[in-house]
Image 1 (cartoon, rainbow, N blue to C red):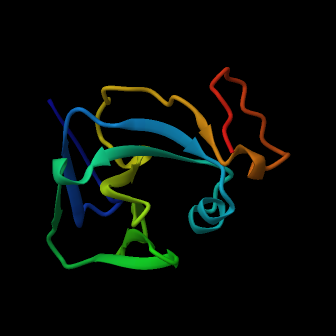
Image 2: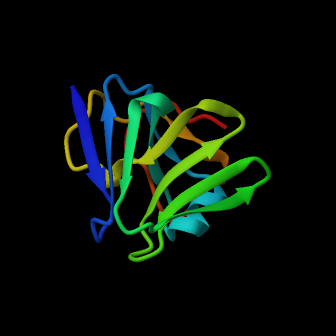
Length: 129
């Protein structure tokens, strides 16, 4: 089974071979600021299971913290990827960048201690961090 997705302008596309590793909502302040959102949902993938095609050389990586990088499209500015020395064999991909259903739904809230007070999450998922 394969899952695919892309940035907003379509310059960067990707495919992921199943299975994915996890899916979770992140409430950390770095995600909030970079994405301009109260929460970002990430899908953890085995790095070797991800194929990225960048037809116009628009994929750019930004070191958001020491040892962690975020990948986005220079053309449309879509934030797509996260990789870190903490999880060297994983590539994290924003859930909204996938064009298809996945093999899992969100399973938890991460960095929940940094959640914003003006958004209420009305689910029963575990709240970590």
